[in-house]
Length: 221
Ligand SMILES: [Zn+2]
Image (cartoon, rainbow, N blue to C red; front, side, top):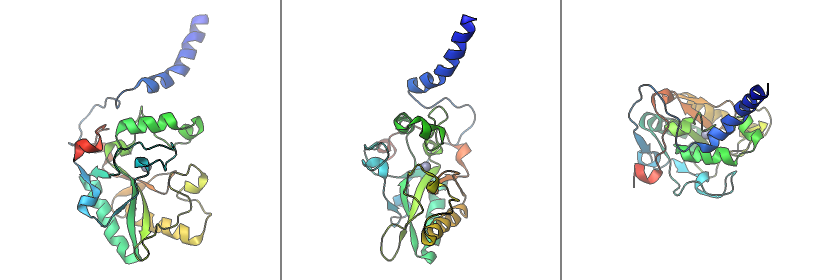
């Protein structure tokens, strides 16, 4: 009886302990494409960057990337460039907040999040990994081509609230319009929107790429 209770307790505690002890991405079986991470601005320098995890302006309050850079697997990067160029007709350009994210940074984000944030799916469980770790997810907003200003959206980037949901019906009509223009442009080129975040898009080819933990400086100097 006592043994059963101890085992049940262990099963409850163990997943947390395992996550805390992980030192690298979980092993994945199967066939994957060779990684081909490309720096987005090398394909189109008019795509703008605001890499929040390279600054203290993120929910952890400290920089997690040593460099403000954005990489994606080549087909995803090329699709993003297509979306960016199509948006020109609507008076907008793409603003990238985050793209490929080394697995160890996903682990650091998970460890910084509250239990509620972990439960609500705003941060990826490192035991599963994030599509950002595969170089196939990108967090984006829009900037206005005329003013250069970031377009207003119904919530801030990385705001953990209902306002971040892509179907949130509140906020100003202008903000909802910008959010919906972004969504249409991205889904037209092969990205799918996250259920929780208007800014997060997964590229359709993500199952073909492994979880990676390669630092930016090792991808390209
Ligand atoms: Zn994201």
